Image (cartoon, rainbow, N blue to C red; front, side, top):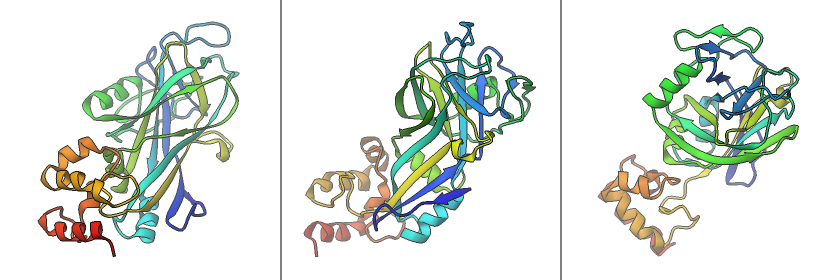
Length: 286
């Protein structure tokens, strides 16, 4: 499900994507599933609840379907002719959960893109956890997905105990962009960075849809020839263009927030010597 917002500028388009699956997992109960809970939780190994009882580590996984957003961006900018310029995760925090199952406490956490989407949220709850089997997510399955896949960090954030909406601006690298543009699912792994963190927020199963997790994505048309992604195509792009031409993997490592497609000056889907003339023309200008 997507919600198309008004364009920020003539060149930009923003789409809000509602989570299609989410769940927290708990290290102290590694084989249980909690995917039907109304809350998600991210907590450190020493987290405690409101009574001071140890609750241990919680991670959360959130899945978003990108198909409708990719279709909308392709319609606006041409197939593959766009890139993500802004990415924000929006959640609704519960500072002091009534259910003592959940810990509480401020601290730091990180958000990472996870390459594997081979999991389902399940139906377990804190009061009625369900055994995980197959691809139903549990602590054990999530660790397997992490170790068997690829994770790329998208930011580290600090949260205080405060009820209400929270927005986190995420970094976008070529791995996430490629996964998003494929038009399937993308998974975000939210994990603690401080031992006393107890960050609880509403899941997609919460009754109020305005308080469910939301991924806000802004895209703009690709500026071909702008290989260093500074918003202009000029002589400072010569070195990056040459690198993209002769060593695409080296370019991806040097410019992780850019897409090598910016070097495809003749739009034939291949980065090769036939793009040199177009790039040279872009440097000279109209």
